[in-house]
Amino acid sequence: MISIITGHSTARRLFIWVEPTVLNALLFAFQRIEIRCYSIGRGYASILFTTTQNLPIYKFRNPKFNKSEIKPIFVAMTLLPHISEQFDGVIWRMEIDELTETIFVEVRNSEEKKVYFGAINLLNAKTLFKDLSTDERWFTGIEAAYDGVLLLHFYQSETGPAHKGLLAIDASTGKTLWSNFAYSFDHLCEAGPVLYDARMQPRKLFLADIKTGATTRIYEPSVYRRFENNIVLPEVKTPEFLPPGMVPVHAFGNMIHYLQYNNFRIVSLHALRGGQLTQSLFVMDGVNKVYEDLLNQEIQKIQPEAFILHKNRLIYIKNKSELKILTL
Image 1 (cartoon, rainbow, N blue to C red):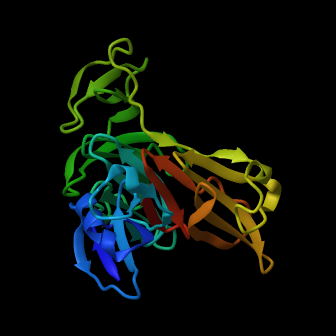
Image 2 (cartoon, one colour):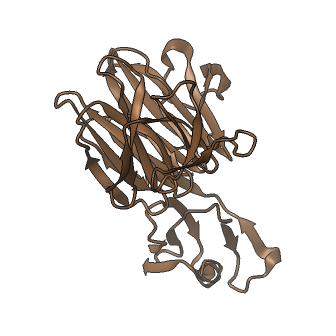
Image 3 (cartoon, one colour):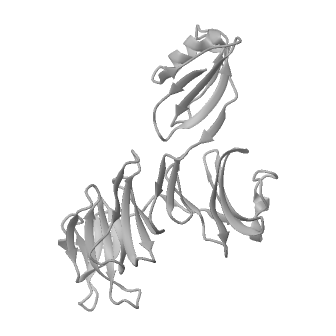
């Protein structure tokens, strides 16, 4: 077997069969790909290579690169997660910093009455910090993320949902940058967070420096637009929306969650297996299944949407505590 591997953890695995005489042409076509090992037998060579892009794959009748002799060949693809991170508790909330391509998670352990925070770089899959906690063990949570800074909020009281006070965490180190227990978060604009002093009435909005917490100027909506993210949520469809036989199980409740990205169809659904309600995720390349995962089992009721799409990344939570991300 010839194995050609990029060494990138976000890889797809593609399997093709070609004649041994065309190997030089293939290697020339994919000259940036590193060869790890190879062997040839019975007149055919098996090539296993990976790529993070939809590169065209061709079969050559001879190694001379005569364009008239290039013909497409069949490619079978399998997706693999490039991020799979287990946390000690329920992933309660996720937030993505669009500027630094960082995903943050809020993890709650109800037995210990403690909340933790984690950060992972989406570009290189590096875990920046995990199980980060604050002096406030329970009554805090994620507010927003912007330009390499995670904003946490506190609560006005232990019995109400209203937020009050902010704590800023450096995403690269996990260290506290600043805190202010008088300010509250209103929204995120293109220039940074918009805050207000909860002690002042009527409410007046200020634009703040995310790195220092200093309020730089009065917020003007006509000047600074709201910051838009690249998150896409799935749509609710009936199973009849899919081609017959595309998914191997019957959808419980006559409902699926569905998204399409390029040629990929992403479906999550609930199904009864052995009398137990389960939740599964399927990814199809056209009509071919290229990924499947069991998200939850022995659940008591139908769960909300199981995944989101961020740019070309499929993001979902498995068993409430494991973050998984695939590059499509």
